[in-house]
Picture 1 (cartoon, one colour):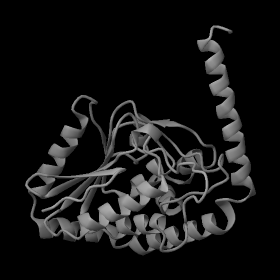
Picture 2: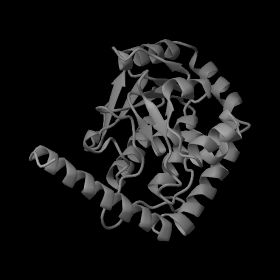
Picture 3: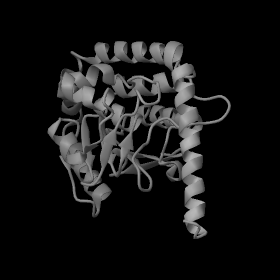
Length: 269
């Protein structure tokens, strides 16, 4: 099969065509969700799901980070409208009949965290950490996580991430049910691929049927949560006053840090 090529997303086919490895490929920005990468990611996932021979999809990241959420861009930013790339990305994951595996190769923030509950299995390196600065940015929960996280870990644990903005370790994420298993960093991705290859040897119809039974009761609630979240972000959060103020403050702090770094480099401090 001819594998599509993208600038910000990498697609590889493994295990005799049964496993697809999709990699966030913007290491220069911590694999943040730039609108171009988002569009390519949706295209890549559509291609993967159009191939019936692919039974398992692994999502991972290039470089130090897994995914650090929405990227701040000048000019036209992301769209959260129903039918947008962001809305559609979540729908693809929610409706997928393939086994979805997240291989968290490093720190994750924002969407890199909130999307994890949409995967069937989540593996992480030991030194990864997780946080969701939605409130800090004047934003709100996304990727159907307003439903999935309280259901997965309980209201208080979800609130510590979403409302308090706490940063949690891989060990804490595992205890909270967000991570299936922590694997050694050495040969991490190879270990995840090996697990995927083993799962892929199972009877394909049985895999699909079992996943369907597990997802059937919550699928519509996930779809509804994705709709509600995107509506809220589009009409009340993204681009509005609280978000704009947060972005301005972030840019001021970034310039101050860069100035301090230059002064230290020049030996003035």
